[in-house]
Image (cartoon, rainbow, N blue to C red; front, top):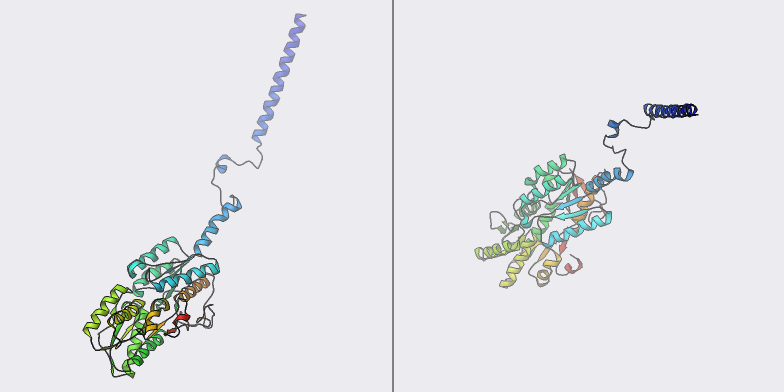
Length: 370
């Protein structure tokens, strides 16, 4: 009985051992013949590629880059003056119309060096397009070349000098024509004789100097009884305080003056104000003007006539030109830029000319909403 029990117990033990051996052998076979879908540990540890990421995650950087490249920024001459406040409305309206990020920045005090730094910052940000109305076009050349080298679209306004560097320069009209109109109107107001002088924003501002030089040459040829009494135009740096102080100096220095011109908004206003304060109607003023700021002087006759173009329109058109370039379009003569005065532009050597001058008088200035 005991012997039989021992044999039975031994048989069971042998069966258990055999079963364990079979199980262990099976596990080993499975491990050695790993499925082909299982990656080696080193390969599994590799960082995921863009293709391995979920579609939404992989698309995110591309979407951010597209948004960044569509960003359009206007770098205007100066912060806090009516002219460029109006220009900002045009740039922002463009952004809403075309659903892109379009904004405007400008330095305090119209400092050319600060404009350069602002452009450097925009280059570092990698914006899609830089628009610029330079205080000193020459000083902007290196930074705008750098922007172009980085693939940024660059469009200037009031700076034909930059046309060889930028994608396009936008002008509201032929600047020489605008200057001749201003000086011819002043001559008429002065009865084509007498002493006169006036202002530019700065001797480095290209459009102001184009108006001045073309106008003065015209007067010298046509009206020999008119005398420009200063060696060069006065500078007001687009600041009313500076313009007002210099007008006082001019009135003391030339008591027999008959005419004043102004190529900046600051000078036209301050010339008119100074004459009003002195009740001096012997001196005629013709200047760059805005209906909102110069309207009262036009109404009361202290400003004989004003000239301008709509800053908001120039901002809108400049942004539209940049947008078209970003989308691979070329601007040619006859192109419609969707704003009055720019419906059929002329393009010459990368300068885009509109036909958008405005003449402001006491009878019509209320018709313009800016």
